[in-house]
Amino acid sequence: MRSSYTIQIFIVLSLSPIPSWTFSRGFRRVRENATSTRNTEYVSSTSELQSSQLRKQTSKSKRPKVHTRDSSWVNLTKLPTNSKRIRLFGRVGLFLHVNANGTVSGSLNQNSQFVKFEIQSFGPSIVRVKNVETGKFLAINSKGILQTRANCKCSYGSREVKEATGVKLVNVGRRGEINAVSDGSIDCLFYQNHEENLFVSFASFKYYMREQYDMFLSIKRNGEVKQPTSTLPGQDSIQFIALNVDNWGPARRRIFG
Image (cartoon, rainbow, N blue to C red; front, side, top):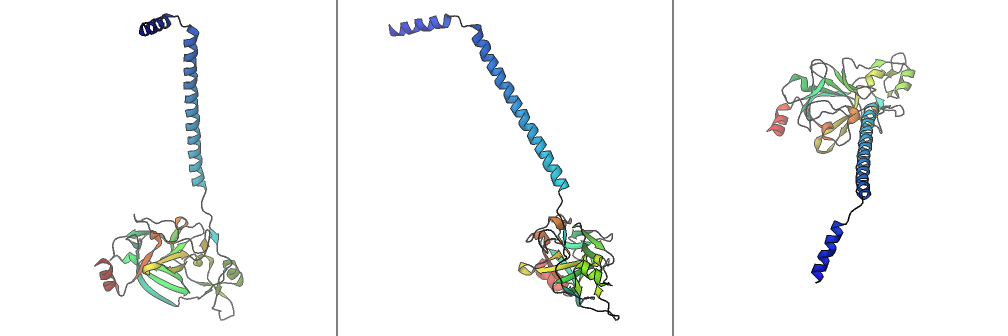
């Protein structure tokens, strides 16, 4: 009896007329929800696109600010006190290489004449790096760009030059004038830092970004130059082993077998 009574109630409810406004209200709510969802998705996608474009524009326009070393006084010599010829073998597995046109890159050719350099010392850990084959010097300019220069000779200067560059030289000329490195010549000077496991790094002596000696000579694994403004202490790309050219045979056997 109970089951038949339940069936009768279900039949009566199913046959009872449902107002049309109920369906229209339900469909209207579905349409409103779908429209609001689409609007929300469009707004979110638009905001994400605008933020990504803003980030790209910011990254392009925002360049690291390069500062000039102007307060530290370091005794430098007019002429290099000593020099040695080396090959700079990077931790990334490439030799530092200066092409005939003056561009810097990394090379696998260990026997190339363009991978030979002369390290010239001008003070405690202050050196100048000259490519033997091309005769050009490595330098980092005021924009933080690595380049090569044909002439980085020291020149006589006045006291004003000395004060402008922030570098004090120990030499005095015959007439009592102060011997100063010209402003462009200081771009060729590097601070040579001894890293772990016999590796060395070369940082700009004159320019820096956040702290002194934080813009390095660097070669990436693909052989391209990594700009000094993008380098950090401890990176593999800034570390080199200085292999003596005169003792190249034993050094090559130790490294390459």
